[in-house]
Image (cartoon, rainbow, N blue to C red; front, side):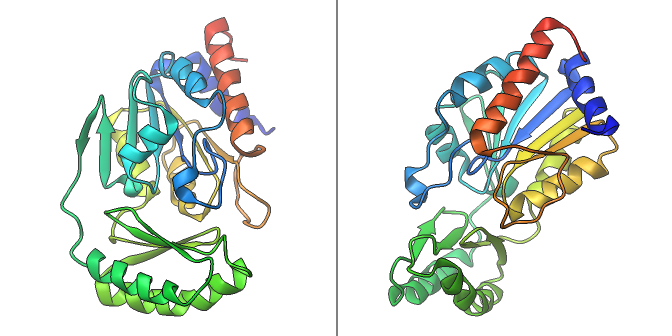
Length: 261
C-alpha cells in the first residue's frame, strides 16, 4: 500500500465529517447475477452501510440503475444520510424523495430497436430502466461473441436515437449523453465541500468516477472490486462485494476507535 493510499484512508478516518464515500451497486455492493432483476445487496451489506452512514459526512451510491431500484434491492431506505444517484446521476434519491429530469425522447425508439435486435438471439435480455435501456448477453451460449456482434448495430441505434452507449461486462447500455459517474461524483464532492473521498466500483462505467477522484485534488482512494477481464488502474483491489464490505467495516472500526493510522 503506497503512502498516498495510506494518506487517503487516514484523511477519511481522521476527519470523517469531511469524507465522501461513493459506491457503485452491481458488482460492488451486490454480486453480479445472470438476471439483473435478481440482484440484491450482499449479506450484511445493509448493516455495514447503516453503521458507516452514521459515522461519515456523506455516503453516496452512484449507479446505472434507477435510484429507487438500488434502494429497494439494497434495503437502503433507512441508511442514515444516504444519497443515491441513479442513471449515472440523472436521478437523485435522498430521504425518500426523488428528483429527476424528463425521460429522454429517444429512449422509446432505442427500446423498440433493442427488442428487435434481441428477438432472434437466445439468452439475450433487454433491461428497461425507464431512463436508459440495456442489452445483456450473460445468458447467451457464447456471451462475448454475442456482445461483439451487437456492438455495431447497437451503436447505430444509439446514434439515431441521440443516445450514448455505455459498455460494461456483457452489457451495452443506451443512455442520455452528457452524464456519467465522474460528472455525478464531481458535482457531489463540490456540493458537500468534501475534504476526502473514496469511490469503489467494478466495471467500465466506474472509470469516470475513478478519474474524478484523482482530479479532485483531495486525499482520495479508488477501489476496484471487479474481475481480471477488465484492466483498471485503482489504488486498492478487493474480492468483490465481500471485500468492499470488509474494507468499509474496517473504516468504521478505525473511526470508532478514533485512530487514523
